[in-house]
Image (cartoon, rainbow, N blue to C red; front, top):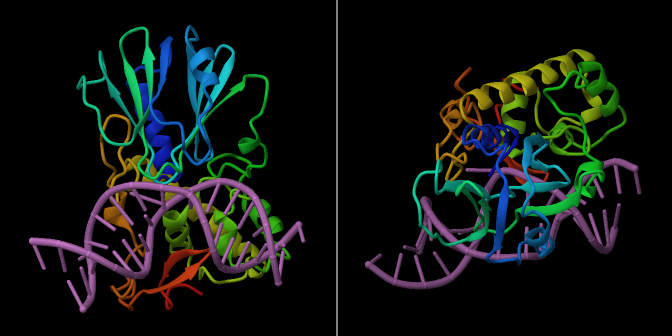
Length: 275
DNA sequence: CTCCTATCCTGCGAGC
DNA sequence: TGCTCGCAGGATAGGA
């Protein structure tokens, strides 16, 4: 479900709900068998801790307290919603509510995840969790440049789509935004990464950034069930140029759009606009 | 190393 | 209407 724009919007909505500054009262584990089993440790360590900040790195949400880092990934279907004071509706229990964070103010944050691909893991603040250790560049940071993309792709034979979705190279780009950014750059997803020209690397750097920025501003993409922590859907799906549009006319040239599996996922492009 | 596939899990829509 | 099948926004282990 969530790529960088969706995760960023979850983070922003958690901030609007006033989550930073809240003090943990209790952590309730209703179901611990997520893909990586939840550890009971967090129920012992977090009470009393004040949440200092919520940050995003790649597609991870980082809840930072005085002494700990609570690392969260939404997987495909994870979401947060608020309840109690400041958080709207009270006692609604829904299927797949696996974790409830209870704060001293009465605010509760509920982690819901039908497919259970999500992650919640506690670590000491002075440690870098293994999940964050090997991540690549933040695409909206100053380090993500055309020269860097050009150099990093040299000698890579895998398709450029696989490259930009590889979180060890660039983070945050998932299956939707990979197709969208490549369309905007006029580059076929199947092109071997090492065959990009420097000029194309410039174009792709820019379109990755502009697509992600536009999608963030639109509140992300809601295809089926994505919502931010305030329950709001995104609207960027209305502006998809190619994603999930196989057989439909290209918005630029009218040609019927193509689809094919790449990097294990369905991939969409215009054979005329993209070379 | 690089690259690709299968796997984890549930829900939903398409097609019969 | 009701059933089965395939697929879904991600990450990762393991094999070639």
